[in-house]
Length: 387
Ligand code: NIG
Figure (cartoon, helix red, strand yellow):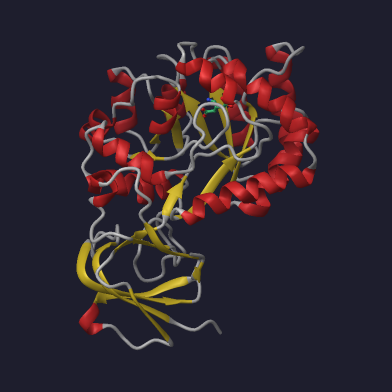
């Protein structure tokens, strides 16, 4: 049996638990993969091991609910051109598709492993990632299989771009038929890039309906490069999240506020593609649930830093630190429908998964107060100390 671990000397503990709230002078006990006890340090039970974090702030590990980690190559030249004034276009995805198809299994796996390690070292303890740089039956299955070895949740994104030499509707038939059949056993979710230059509303609806019929949960890339039907479609079909939400009309915000669909905002992507930052303030004020995620990928957002996303949300998107931290932990968990029940993530209460992030700071406020400064002191992932 794994030894129990008492983490004590916590100056500020963010639990995301409605009853526990935020505690000062607190302690946590981890028992194997779960949190066993949370409360005032003075009342903490004994444990096999004791770690004194000397007044530091502790919070649930980041939940990065939107990444694209199965890829080869990079797009440095495209990024440089963009910073010189070129627009971001969905077509850039094809460059990564070519590199990914040409890569060996072991090179692709090394890349996923490296990026997951990079994320974990910065306090991310739960990761979703997508296929979508294969776009053949064989390459999408390969991507899903490799991803499943290293991340917690895998999403099928065969409908990322219409591959060269394909007619859009014909490709959608492949995605909804043979490709979905082959990939479904390896994934929990399906996603579609509903955007001009990728898949239109009807094509996106067909992909999502086929995936739903197969029993997969739904996610949507929507309203990234301009206003569009993505948000409404996601809400209509009961998707767990619609991601990007950079260009929202007021009826999109209202629809999200009245639904269970999480608006997953990707500020690093908005900055890296020179788009406006998503309107997080109106979403929250209208009653929508938001998540923050990195969107780590080689084209539109090549960062794994959730702390950067949180700092941007506070400094530029007018969220409070508490709102931004909650969106990057509990919000991500909600977007993956893992925020409650046994093994809940994004929360530190009894029974939750033991995913703990200790900051080298007395308060989560420092995430925005000291932007860009490495802030991770220690990390437990599923009860194992990984940093
Ligand atoms: O979420 N929008 C579509 N997919 C990715 C970008 C992929 C790329 O440019 O390679 C995104 O931003």
